[in-house]
Length: 121
Image (cartoon, rainbow, N blue to C red; front, side, top):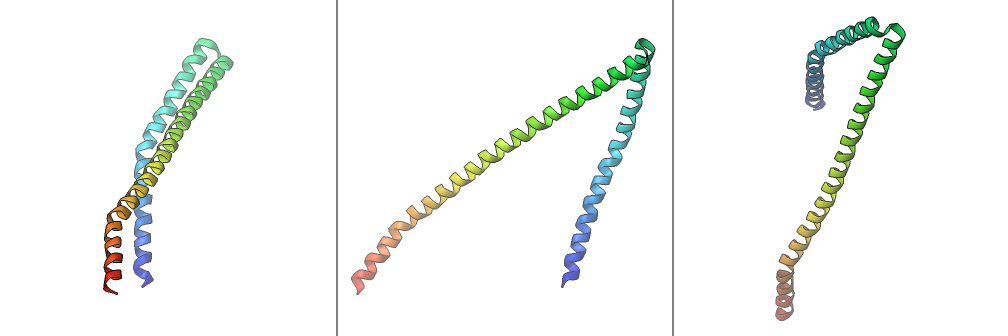
């Protein structure tokens, strides 16, 4: 009984893992290329400004990139949160309006049923 469920869970987990491994294998060459480009930029800056200044420039550039990425992620998360809250409000409104429509549609039938029951007694 549980063997089928366990096999499905294993299959789903392995599929998910393979999916992320495939994505990672695509990203690895780009990460290596980014590392080499960073090294080349550092060498160029060392030749132009000296070791200490070049390393400070690289560190500052990387910190700036990180700060921009953090701001972008924060803005995206905020937009998703606002969209989620609006969806919840819309869903709640639809549920209320659906319930109201059902009550209004069933009210005449309920009143008729009540009237028919009283007249037969």
